[in-house]
Image (cartoon, rainbow over all chains, first blue to last red; front, top):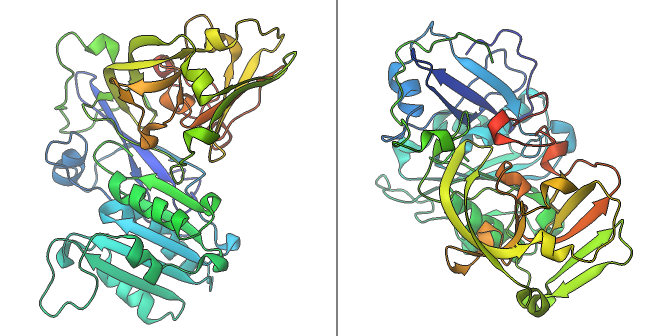
Length: 219
Length: 204
């Protein structure tokens, strides 16, 4: 989206979209920004929900050239600036990748060498959002590691994780608590609860674990 | 956002059920489930370590253990709740101790309270928004002990304001002469948070 008078955002923030029907009826939802603050345009990730009200409009009806009412950026907690350093542990489920992708892109655009590990849970290989871009970024950068897990179906020959994220997986993938990573966890509530609880049990400082729920109910 | 803007091709699907629209504040939509929102890991304080404290601008702090808190008179109430992330939920049923009960016999000239929680969360409110039958320390939701992800063992319940004011895992109220922004109030969210005036963010 081109956003005139965009005053910039921090990686991880979201924005509100408000739709107005001709009779004045309005619906509002929040969407995370996936683009880097350095980017001129603003990119949101919208997961289409069949019984949704705003997401089917955005994915099916909205066309290039249409206007949208936006409000934001919003949220100053689930956000990361390259100067804050890391290491950065990013854990995403599904469309929860959006704010974390903004962080990965911001880190790249800012020329930061903060080590990053991204653990990303998707239902299937084709449903991995930003798969190609993540591959490219990781291939050219020894300090960015991307680990996928596929929970429903795997392509033939898949050698990666094949289950929902659990404590064992985090033990293998997350940094050691002594490395004091800054963790950002974004996804559906069960994933966020599991991951945040497991990180604390593994010995990570709860104050360095930031969470954002992402899903049909507006998180 | 601007006035008079129409979203081309948008008709809206989720019109609220008959008879409920006057209960849904502007910009909100109804949900059946109970979404969970929090900024960090869910704290899990054993009940043996739990206490509730009234402190700050009071003659002497008051403190209750979990047993003592449970022995206080509890009220049952049904209220609509409204989250700043746009969902509202009608007719939620809670049981808890009225803040009026906790403040009985407390002498204070304070005008504000800061509720504080396990995990470091805080939220600020004018004292008059949590007294006079407007706020509770809730321990039961729909007849069951309040689940940890929803703020159990106990959360502040201030249903007339956006739900971030209803601090989960609450452990005490600090009475203060002056106002002091809490966690979300310092991070761009409105200081007061009235859903009927759509006070979501700074500047609303």
